[in-house]
Image 1: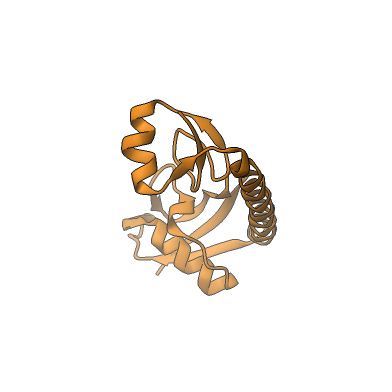
Image 2: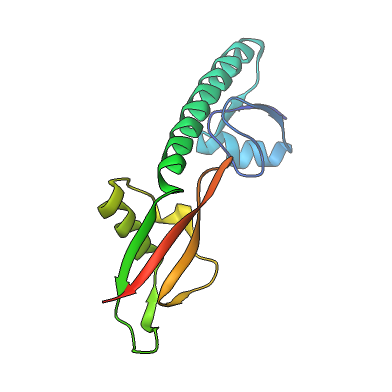
Length: 148
């Protein structure tokens, strides 16, 4: 079954793509949920318009993510946490703590789902946290943890 996607569907395609799917999947899932419509000749022009707008939006998102990355890469984000005399923290620094510190110090609002901490931050010192704001824009944020 040949369908025109009206929204992004994981594992199938993106909005504006014309895809070939199994009849049952299209008839029982994609069409009733409104994720797709049957592909027709007139729909091809609509698909091209959807792809153009998707590409423009993607380019704008990538540009905005690159601008944010350019501001955050050289910055050192300071986070204070309760710590023992040896430098171990009571608990750990979470993604939410990093997002709040970035917002307070730079004014840049990040989604907590775009930040990833590889290994829990449980000591005082400098740590690196990865951020992915766009599939093509991934960078490291330097976090300086100090005792409170």
